[in-house]
Image (cartoon, rainbow, N blue to C red):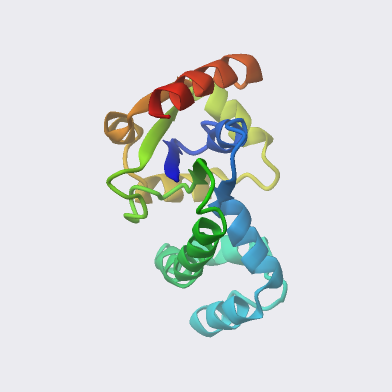
Length: 189
């Protein structure tokens, strides 16, 4: 199994690119959403660490947002709780897909949290800043302060670009992205 890690800036279209590979995708953002909606154990841990902010189960993302905006240290507390569980979900995903030719890792902090292996193929999603900003503004409940806080804990996109084996210029249209993916898959097969 070849692991392909998709990296790039927030809003660059990592998920769009990952989903166009046609292989199983581990989407960390979706897994976090599932935890907030379905995992009572995570709720109890967050409620214990952030009793002034976390009140409801399923966890209301507005409560998470308020906790982060009120005190940036709360982001670290949330990450410490949630990321342990995401790593477990990743292990299960990898075990389930161990016989697949490729798996795609759509994990925003793949490099920062040292989740990638030396043998992983890293693909950087390169998008124009104006396209990224436009896309972010269209997201429901988009909050620029939160996005900037997340950007601060991520490595600079140029660093990720240098670490990557391939670059996909994302114009947010399927045809050119799929063409580049085909070239990448052919080269690493």
